[in-house]
Every structure is written in C-alpha cells, then in structure tokens.
Length: 123
Length: 108
Image (tube, rainbow over all chains, first blue to last red; front, side):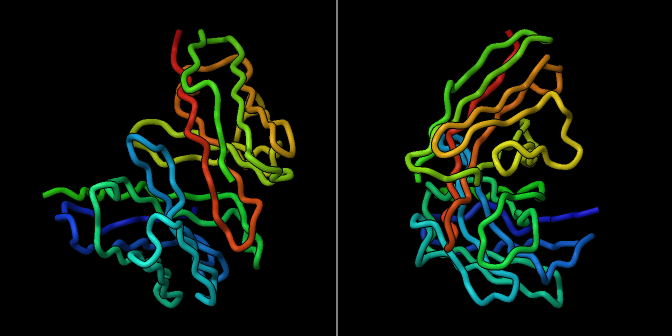
C-alpha cells in the first residue's frame, strides 16, 4: 500500500523558515516524480513544486520561486520542501503527492497523496 | 493555463445526478484529472486522461471532454459523494500543474 506521511509543519513568523518532510513507503520511491501541493482556504488547491525521480530537474510555481527549494533522498525514500522568507499567504495545508505513473519528462496526474501538514505563517 | 470550474456550489439531493464543469484557457488535450476532497482528508484521484476512472473508483463517476471543455458526472449521488471536486490539467512539460477553483457538492 502506498503511504506518504508529511511532517514539519507548524507556526512560524513572517520572514521565517520551515522544512517539510514526506516519508514514502509501499512503492519504489526512486522511480517516481514527486510533488508538493498546498490547500489554502481562499484559493483551493495550488501546485507548489515538482522534482524528477533523479533530482535532475526541479520546478516551482511563480508564487514560491526563489523562496522554496524541493529536494529528495531516494536512499531514505523521502521528499523535502525547504521554505524560506515565509509570508502570510503561504499559510496552507501542504501535501506530498506522487505522480500516478513512473514517467519521464511527461507531466502526470497525482495518484497518491499524504494527509498533509499545516503551515501557519503569523506574527 | 487557467482552469475555471462551475458552478462554485452545487446543491443536489441524494440519488440525483450531478454535473460539474471545467474549462481550460487553452487546449490541454485529454491531460485532465478530477479529484475529490472531503474535509480533513487528502484529495483522491477520481479520473485521469479526461475519462479514465482511477483504480477503485465506482462506475457512477464518469468524465468526458477534450481540449478546453470537460465534465465530471456523478450519477445517483451517494451520501459519501458530498465533497469538493477539483479539476487539474497536466498538459505541459516542464510541469506547471494548475487546478480549478473547485466545486462543492452539497446536500439539497
């Protein structure tokens, strides 16, 4: 069974930093592209970032480019999101999500999701 | 690519049919997915490739459309189907996945 478990969320002041983690199990983590998606009360679901299976390419939404960094450790079956210069509008539940299939240089739907971790940016 | 869903809220009685719409600002072919999300839960993939049901999804869920106009239909709504539904396009590489704003299906 595919499992994705996020951690690392919490309350942080504007301008602060936070590192989210996602531990994967139940599948061959190293062959799948992985993603971060967030849910905000006002905007719904928003794609944040994607990373290819080998970490060769990383992609970001314009809203987080230059502030967030996605990474992964295939030996640990783990995905990360380093968030810096956090703003109030980054407040959201952050989900780790796996591409539906193990594809190369093709975008895909998101077949498996974690339960999410809440990030609150407030003074 | 901007995804627009309508209506924002749909009030339906149990047992009735629900029809949700999703429009893309430019063609995405059939690279369109639908997700269901209930409060406090993770999104669940329902449909990919515009009309292909994901594993384990009941047959009462069906997707149609291509290009810029898409529809998710839920025949004979069950109590567990009341939720928020999102469409999402995944047409481009490098990826810039975009979601619609969601349609809340509520009990009438």
